[in-house]
Length: 129
Image 1 (cartoon, rainbow, N blue to C red):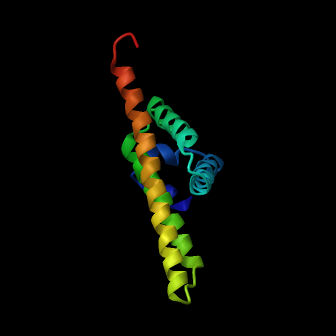
Image 2 (cartoon, rainbow, N blue to C red):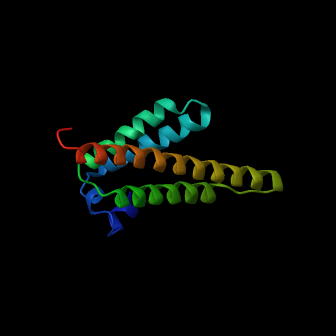
C-alpha cells in the first residue's frame, strides 16, 4: 500500500508493517466480495463495528481511518478502470455499476466502522464503564 506509506495524514497506519497493511486491505476486499455476493451484511457489520472499537482503543484518530478507506476505495476504482476496456455501451454500463457498488460498500463500511468507534468512545467517557 504505497499510497498509505506516502500519505502524511495517516501516521498511525504508516506504523503498521507491510504485512499488516496488506492483511488490512485484503480483509476489506474479502468483505467487499462477501457484501456483493450476499444480502446478509449483519455479520460484516458486527465485524467492522469491532474494527472501529479496536481502532479507538488503539488511539487511531477517526480521520485516519476515513483517509485510509478513501485511499483503498480510490485504489480499487483505479484498478477497475485500468483493467476495464469497455468496448460497447453495455460493458461501460457494467463498469459504472461496479464502481457504484464499490462506492456503496465503502460508504457502508465507513458508517459501520465509525459507529463502532463512536460507541467505544462513548463507553470510555462514562465513568466506571
